[in-house]
Length: 355
Image (cartoon, rainbow, N blue to C red; front, top):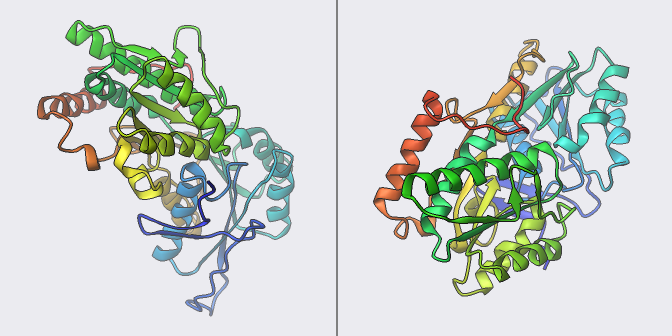
């Protein structure tokens, strides 16, 4: 069932028209001077993916709240062929800051930025290595490690699962961290909790090959649950909503760990969400746009890499599971955060962003 595109999520209001046109922000504030325009191009997941596109748009909205001289708008890409067209369209509209969202947009953004060296671009989840593209990346393996440990500690069947949208670095980094967190739990507790849907060593696993089709997400998670998984972490944008809905209909047969933005603020299925591996895209985008609007030159090197230490990644509150997660397990998950931030535990993934 398609969720309506007007969603109130943690203070985030989305009013996306069906044709993907940008909402208009005519608040009349600061009409005297020239506005600073920040223009966003979504990937194919769309503005209402309850995930990284939604998060990036929230960042632009927060930047506008902080500086009413900033004008914001977005265009939703319907297919990968739209990326370069939409980016170039915003160059032609003379947008001051053009934000590309998602690792799938890396090549198109690099091409547009190389062709327009005086145009400031930003990108979430990629680093094309071009001076006029400010990369915002996130070491989500660190927070996913916590989530894997939590899942292993909470599983009754001794099997947990994960699946992705596509086998690309911004997806597999979550899956690597999750698998390692389970392995860390097994070693610490002398247990044998199994991870279904992903093998870190071979980098092979289960994928929907789509970030929006909820029936595909449901199909993949149903297969994992049929194999015994009682906790599933989809890393598939809006496709993962098929999993959360199925979990809610399962009467407690399985639970879900969400990703990117706190699922209790962005999905209708909070009751089945144990936690979320949060990628703090809103703050990274907000900070970048405010700096750029203030005249600061954004440095492509080092760009921004979110970690547990700088609060760029985290795990969300347990919400409805708060009373279900044992106090000692909560304490262990908290200690893992401290140990990773301090460098006592090293989390590795082939997909980790370069700093």
